[in-house]
Length: 199
Image (cartoon, rainbow, N blue to C red; front, side, top):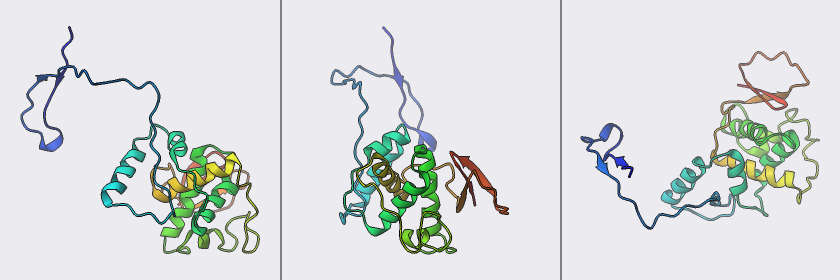
């Protein structure tokens, strides 16, 4: 019979570590399928306690993959205008790319809205003149709202907005398609799919 030992205490606050035998728990069961809990809807007007927000954020951080976190996002039929702008930027700039590529584009929009150098809203960032090639005047092309690509863009927008998954370009403020070569004097962070990101 194999004995399993555990120890009390952890980290800097650990007391004297005394080995003890861990007894089997008859109530333990094994679940062979992943268990994914949906995160709260964004822009629904529902309020959460700080403890609930902390729990949701912790659950998001433990998602095994970005794909699992995207799948866990609640469907949002009535997006706020700001979330529609963020999802639209992801949809038109990175539709068909990997989830990481879509998140990277969303991260730039979020970062710009949080920077004093750009407009302070997602729509302000997206509609800022000469920034996004898909914007014509002050309008965005029509999205195929029932498409998988749009649902995916909305889920990625929720993740970028909540900061529930770390993007490899978390500090990026600029990006361009790999097919062009602007003479920017910026710090290059990474290439993700068909875009190169800078800060």
